[in-house]
Image 1 (tube, one colour):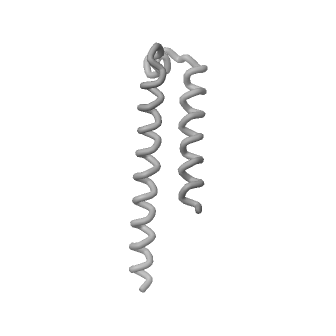
Image 2 (cartoon, helix red, strand yellow):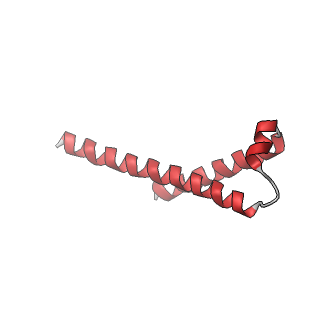
Length: 72
């Protein structure tokens, strides 16, 4: 009984992590498509802190939304 519950919870955790990672990756790709004139990754490599703040805030926002989705 305890092992069954453990395996169920492990499966739920695995699905939640996959959805979280997929949603962050997809949001980054959509953000790249929406900002045609800016290469965020080149700017990050140059050390542009403004772009780093925008990208990191987007990742944190998506992560919060996914957390709220799974807490319901």
